[in-house]
Length: 183
Ligand SMILES: Cc1cc2nc3c(=O)[nH]c(=O)nc-3n(C[C@H](O)[C@H](O)[C@H](O)COP(=O)(O)O)c2cc1C
Image (cartoon, rainbow, N blue to C red):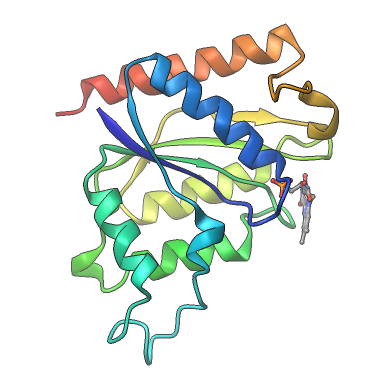
């Protein structure tokens, strides 16, 4: 059982990257092999139909193979203007082309998100689910979302609130249970 996991934030000190670390630990504790991909280091350029298909960015080719080798994708993303960040949409667009070479079809998605605000990235999660469904992926029901992220983590990067820890555990349990059902 292998998944590829990454943060949809490019920001140094990102709350979503902190949450990714917790999700990765939780998945590994449940026996999942997690390939953690560094979106920021990949420095993905804007997808340009005139040039990108003929001369794909090396890091895009790399992540395509890594997605192909995985049963699922875990995306921990901020919400930008009630949607997903443009950089994440660009990545999904880039990796999805050309269509015959898209690695997404049939993968199981787990969606998580953290925001400094009160809204838990819920609107962004709906948008992400929509885009992923267009790519032939299924997202497990719900998403683990974190509001007021600046107050949510302790010094060690753990969630301070026991109810939030239990909620993350429950989400990861559901994700891994569905992953196990996959051939
Ligand atoms: C362009 C932009 C748009 C944003 N829009 C939203 C939004 O719609 N909803 C929200 O909860 N937070 C929004 N935020 C605030 C982010 O939640 C906050 O910057 C958060 O720290 C981003 O996640 P990160 O720490 O992982 O980078 C926005 C931030 C930026 C830069």
